[in-house]
Image 1: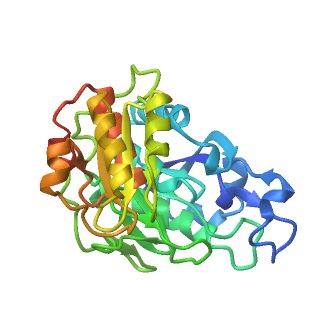
Image 2: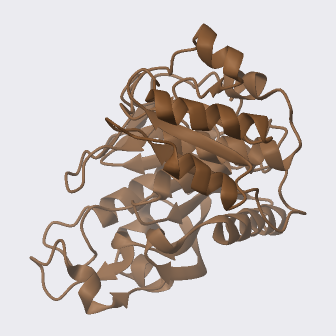
Length: 331
């Protein structure tokens, strides 16, 4: 009998690790204040032993609203250590709250330097819920991480049986199981009961083949997001510049337009050395590259959501990259 693949599971907390006050406590479970560590999460899913040899890796037991740059870097270093310390490691799974899961996934997809796949999983219902989705998401995440075909695809996201690319996936619904979707292109494949079924590969540059290495960095440059709405002025843009932002991403009207007053503030920000990237609040489709915006020095985010564009812009600025048009075209 062949040995099962070895997969490490790093726990960060989130809904998948949370315990509510009862099986029907599906929304306000955070009030209970109970978040399981990764060993306890794994212990509740004995079926994991059927698909892999699982190595639990404690990290955090917090909501993903509390995760950011410090935790991203620490996760990156943990992945480095796991890869170096376990030559036979097939892959890594990160359990994560769904609020910021896509941002952590995209950061890792741009910065990982290890050959093993890294798959992020979460849940829409807490661990204590009736018919919770966490256990199956975790089992399927481990199955995908152990699949050799997952290598070279950057970080992946697995929820609701769907395998998605970190760059493309976004949370589209507050409560529904099918919340993580790729609006423009669809899933890469499915974790079905009988097989991991793959159907396409992303074409943009992915870890480990990227120019971004943050291991020696203490911080990322400040990059903020300014949301556009009818009648918006330049107050938010001016405030971000005053706060020391080195980059600003706009969530504009589809396909990326902003109000005249906001545009004027953005143009002033560019003159002060702040990088400005335009994206769309529509969450699907490319932000338009217009003659006017190009003349004002704005860069288009392509089809990245504002939150993903912020991650890429921060990494580009941290590495002193001047040609931002190239970066947003390649990644």
